[in-house]
Length: 355
Ligand code: AQP
Figure (cartoon, protein in one colour):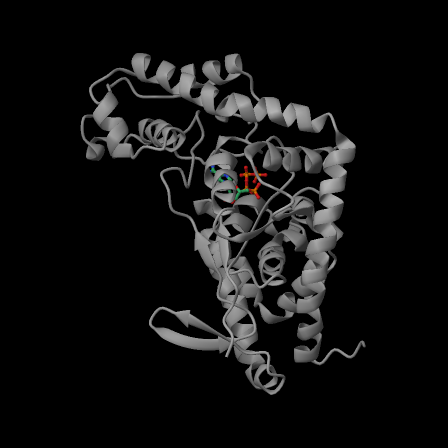
């Protein structure tokens, strides 16, 4: 019996300026994985209309995320870069997954609770079904690995639950059609049509926190621009935001345990570690006992050194809209061919007659 071919899929929503959290938690990993996997990187524009339907600049934001992917080093010739709405099979598979998943599963999602707030009855159905579309994004390519930040862990677990339920509900049909693929789950070997996708979350900056509040994650939609470092910020803006970042009055501790209960200090150390490719222990060994007046300028210099080249390359790419649109069109065609193949099998498995 065949095994799943290793394949990476991930996406970013065009909901605003990309920030350091998106870069360290996701995009930087996307770049690193290109050498060892076939990769599909998507700008998930249909996800971006779940929380807010009308965006004056959705198309521009889609180009901007694409430019960030390319500026960070993703190669659209070797891999696939496209925007989600070009491949209608994502929405089609999401509909089938809406019929596989249970309402209770969606209601338990912390992202839904956070984004819907107190007035859940008034949230869009799309926001509730967001994880079902995310599962479809991944599984329409039968992707085996998904690099994401820590905040997406619960959605990835749900993706596995949906794949498993589909595999179980249709196990006889899948076997009858000869569409079973073998996979290892822990010590066990199981069969199914969809893989139980592995999240790739490790690293020192899987959850970058707000620079204004160490208990909140850095987010595109935070009303305070001082809370995040945007990938498009210039050197002055980066330095100012780090200088103004909330901290406590004590110097940095000499041991890692000393960061416990100091979320802002822990966040800045994690950012330094990720940007310098060091461990947090190494950063503490270098800066332990020092005041933030010493650490913050060092962090600002490092952030400028790492992010400024991406920002200037992004600006250069964004000047050529025709090039960006060409990348997305080409990527969409290649992704579409793969997605169509999966959906043909899904139609056969479910019994949807349409040939
Ligand atoms: N603070 C973060 N630290 C580490 N990783 C993060 N990611 C997001 N924020 C952080 C990761 O970035 C990828 C793309 O995220 P997204 O745009 O699809 O959705 P999001 O998680 O909803 O991002 P934001 O910035 O918080 O946007 P808004 O404010 O619109 O909700 C994902 O892999 C995510 O884990």
